[in-house]
Image 1 (cartoon, helix red, strand yellow):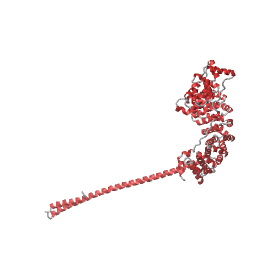
Image 2: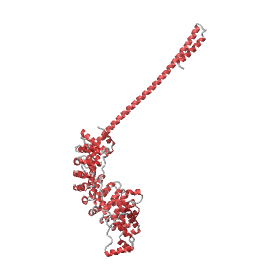
Image 3: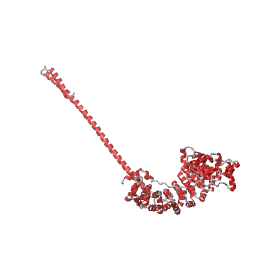
Image 4: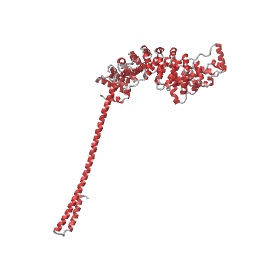
Length: 607
């Protein structure tokens, strides 16, 4: 009830009670009035006390709410302060870490970790610019870089004597040169002379590695090869690669430097006959052969093998010079030191180089007298890698091409069982499993066809019933290169008309007549040469196998009348130059610049 109405109600109640005592007089009336007055005052005091308590309760509630609100405001402010402090701490740590990363990266171009960097603001600005250009090379169009004359500015930085400037500028040029559109402009602004000069005088292996990688990348362009050789780039690479690093406190030519130099020489000699001859004249073979034979670094050995293969490619002169420098022994030493499962790139490069060395009968005999035959057969039997199997089988073909000495040696080293094992393992079965090995099986069939042109090897083939495998392969394979190569060995095992007649006359069975030889060769003819003239060796094999007894007798009579055998010895089924190949070397961006996010983030910070 509201206080006003409560007071009115109390007053009316008091009035009614006093009205009842209106008949009293004097002291009695005074006593009654005093008692009623005391009661009213007591009631008012109680009401006032109650109202005060209510008001105090309300005020206390408001104070509690205000205190809680203030506490929440203070807590929120403290949290914001803590977050801002943490952000500032992280920003400072990040900035400190980025500067530390940059210092470590720049210090990596010094000759030794204990050397004090000689860095002034100009050199630091150049180094930062080169780092930005190295990062931007993968994200900025080459046209924009060339229009801004970035190649010219980077080439100008190569004249600095500070390794901290040379290293980043070489990396930036190398990254930019990975784009085919930038290779020629970089050379045209005069990059080769300062690179060649620094290769001769720079003491830092890290800088030399980047300079050699830059030349390797530029040499992937055909017109640049002659420019690099003419501006003494190749001579500088050969001199650096030939430097002795043994028993030297701070060698210039470390394993990384030598691998980069060899990679550049690989690309310089790739598809360049003039550079092959120039490298020989510069006496670069000795350094390459020694690297192949003695280096403990797998990347150095791989690049050395590739360089020897490119130098020997389709050139009897350079191949002979390599053999004079014991290049064949070095390649065999590299193969012997390799793990057949892990070092597949070295094994492939070495087998390609050995095959390229066998480009004439003299070189074939020299190479076959060493360990090359044994190692090639071993790889054909045990390597799990299709590209190594293909290279090893191709090497067998190159060794045996028109060389009866090497055909005999290969037969004695169980080359025929090894090749048959390769064909049986990877030439049949599920297409998904056999498809990666198509070219390995094709090379093995081609090698087998060359070996079977030797009569002794044909006896080995008959004892192994290898003709059955080859006939089944001709009847089942869907790969045209394999079908063509498999028909070579089948035709090599087919006797001529006189041999067939003599076998029938002596009562000897012939495997070609016991197997489905005619359907197999017919499938080859129809599938591969349906509307074209098949090669003579296939036509002659089909003809002689299909002769009946009367036709064989007539052919024998004609041969006796001529006083000679009816058929000449079969020629090789392939062309020698088809057995040779050369390879370039892949150039990759700098690993630290390419993969470190801290360095990439620095490209947008100006400190």
